[in-house]
Length: 520
Image (cartoon, rainbow, N blue to C red; front, top):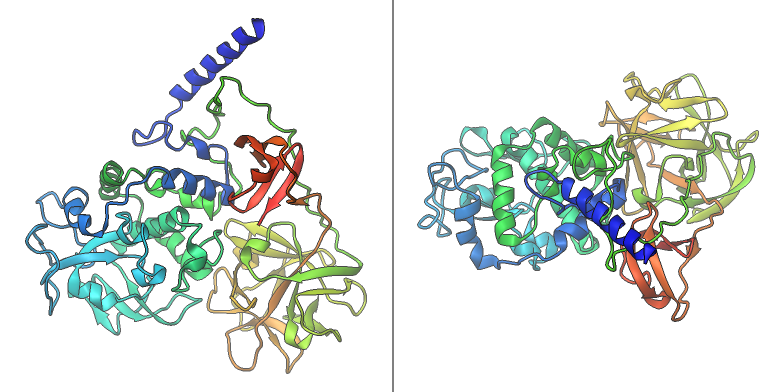
């Protein structure tokens, strides 16, 4: 009886604390399941929350929905593509258009051809906006980007079409007005989160192919900048609430201004608190049955070594940015020629060529005389650093010709780089402050430096060291009843058979019976 009374008391205490902890914009505990998560796990937690219990209105019902979600104070359609329109929501919808201002239609900010017109994406109000039909047609299925407007500009230059000026893409793009760039950035953050399990089947080369980060690097960096420069507006907040009433889910990137920094940006290693009180721990919601299950013993991540490997080591070709994390030991090389980055010279890095065939996994000697040099990967927000533990400095670029320098500090932007991994496992490594350049291999002069891309230099790849791990591959194990926890100790499945423990869970690491299991 004493145990029962204590359990009831604990349950009441938890209920009181949870009732006290409330999210923003009267969301209550809607986002509670994302509490204390960070980075990739935080994104997946939000994906689960905003995908649960949603209502697909259907494509034809969007016209009626716009009368609740997208009206200006004067009752006309709020058009984010044109500044000359004053559309009646009932009489000016669809129809024929020959010029800007003729009628409005339903614009998929994520073009529906990218997801093959499938539901529920096709009628998701969070990304299907009412816009001028003619301007919408001029956009077509181009990605968002920045351009000079040399191909087309709407009245007053509000929207523009031209060749992309953002490093990482040089095709035609559509640029919305500055006052709406944050709106569209948060829309794309929502789409990459809500549909993270769908992204590997989308086309368009903007989303995927992995669930995290879920958006290609050149676009992600641009959207993070757009969101920062154009903060959440009253228009977005009211639209978010109106959609919640119709569609039964919310855009967390509107409810939590700056949330994108916790998922992808400079706060990616900071835990998220759904009530906004970052210094106040939140008690978890009690589990069915009244009692709170014991948390597994805390797992302390290994401290990245700062000492280089000496001698033989195994490295694996990096084919996705998700394979990299701070503390990894990597090689930088032009793999077709078996040429890897070596010691530093005055204004470039020497190369070392080894007689090995290009392959996915290689075993070779590093950090010895006449052997390639490895680097310790670091992270500063969304940017990365490359630390040479032999020479004890960071690769850096100071904006002087093709020179590749060394820096003593990781916090200097000169030592920070943006990494993008292409589909064919090539690594685009651009200086944070000079995205028009990148690290390439000059095979004529046998060196690595920071060039503008040309036919005289070769693109590189990254290899990450394969290290022993206590993470187990999942094997079916009969009918044993188990509980499944995340790495942060949150219970995700209770009293399930081992056969079903990890089925259909998002990729990540989970704890069962004190052991870590990987879901890929």
